[in-house]
Length: 82
Image 1 (cartoon, rainbow, N blue to C red):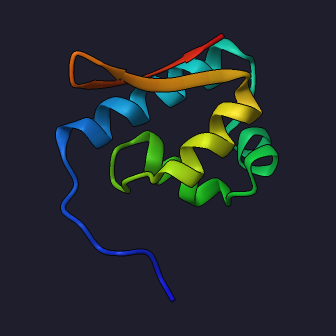
Image 2 (cartoon, rainbow, N blue to C red):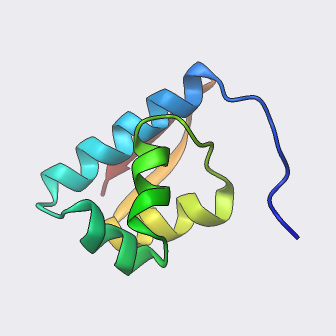
């Protein structure tokens, strides 16, 4: 079974951008982070550019791989290094 389809939002682009910035600050390539998180580099690219939404399970795997946390602040999703 595939993931449930949903409409992408500005929040998807925002969290994707935050994931990319966190990855770059950690000095990792997309391929390195994708391998650590059990994703393909293509899927990570789509997440970082906001062309693909990201669920809780994947957010947790990305956060673990980056030593980061994610949550909500004033209704806005945030992703940052610990």
